[in-house]
Image (tube, rainbow, N blue to C red):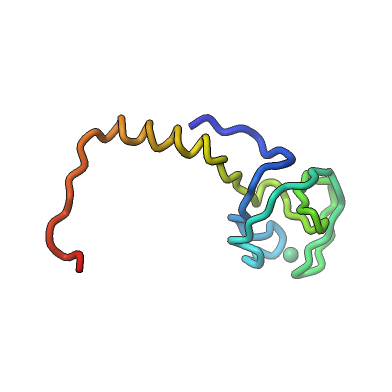
Length: 101
Ligand SMILES: [Zn+2]
């Protein structure tokens, strides 16, 4: 699947720990990108102030995370495309018998 950069309006999920203190706070958080900006933000966990401006995505409450910590969640249209591709790649599915229930 061809991925594209995160843009305003995308649904994203925090998937990586913070770069400074490897805190996993926020991992799994999903939000819709309301803005992308380059900023000198500081870490809410350890207080580290990033020395260089870095691209961050912000939600509508101006809560942000570094772009590199985020993964874009594909839209429904894109998910359907992926499903079709996968079923083409694996045309026959071997069903397991037994164990379930
Ligand atoms: Zn930190």
